[in-house]
Amino acid sequence: MKVLLTGGAGYIGSHTAVELVEAGYDIVIGDNFSNSKRDVIDRLKKITKKEIKFYEIDFTDYEAVDKLFEEEKFDAVIHFAGLKAVGESCSIPLDYYQNNIDSTLVLLKAMKKYEVENIVFSSSATVYGIPKEVPLKENMPTFCTNPYGWTKYMNEQILKDVAKANPKMSVVLLRYFNPIGAHESGLIGEDPNGIPNNLMPYITQVATKKLPLLSVFGNDYPTKDGTGVRDYIHVVDLAKGHVKAIEFSFKNRGTEVFNLGTGKGYSVLDIVKAFETANEVEVPYVIAERRDGDVAECYADPSKAEQLLKWHAERDLVQMCKDSWNWQQNCTNNF
Ligand code: WQD
Image 1 (cartoon, rainbow, N blue to C red):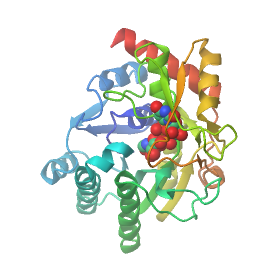
Image 2 (image 1 turned 180 degrees about the vertical axis):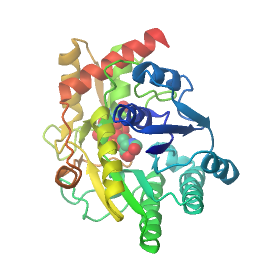
Image 3 (image 1 turned 90 degrees about the vertical axis):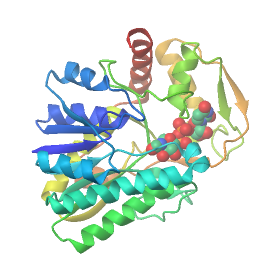
């Protein structure tokens, strides 16, 4: 079975590439390297000890995508490619709508022409907006608070409608919670351009003294210690969820939505303490103002994925912290 990974050189995409190869799939990576590095492909070859076929491609370019589908006979697509910074999406919304929606429309047009009927889409818990209750279930209301989230919401709707119009289609929507950690090799991991937006890459850079201290965005939320609570999931567990989703996609038609989370919520201070203890390092921090758009609590009810995908997260917070630190030290020293 041959699977196209759009944005496959990125954080989640590269980890999923490893798991798919190790599960025996043929993969092709397409990426424009706008938010990833070309040498990730070489590192994937090192980890998998296999050749990794890739194309440098912009998925909003229909001619290029049509040529790719003509050359490669895909059985399925996992669509990771997209801009993904919440804050940035508020300042350049047009770039986000154009890139994230057009790439999906172009991809679906090519899939229709070449009769590729299986797609797994990288969605996000951000589509739940400000949760009225936790844990979050897939049938709970969705409403977004930023353009990035709206692009995920709109892509989910486009995919549902396309599947409804074509009974042969299989669409699996995966709503990620907060992926952290890295492959045990330390060769791939979260590698944001510039100052990290997300908590864990910021913590790891404070621990290496690349950044002076962590700003904890608010300690007056209605949570156990006043700081934001999230469902942190090891990126390898998330990647393994995609293998299960592809298998599910081949066996089923229509659309299914799954939360990929652990079902556990940890606060910012929980993460800081767990990281310091697991790695015997210090993470100095200061309490700062709340960040616009943040919610108090967001964590998953992952029972639907456990039942239908036969998948659950296995790695604990200690492992997530150790693997994040291993990656940070490796990528600082070796690349
Ligand atoms: C986690 C917690 C912050 C940084 C976003 C997207 C989501 C997904 C993951 C793409 C919050 C706090 C953070 C810092 C802090 N992205 N924090 N200081 O916002 O839950 O989710 O990233 O798919 O779609 O919405 O993740 O890591 O930014 O924040 O105190 O320097 O850490 O307030 O409570 P978030 P995050």
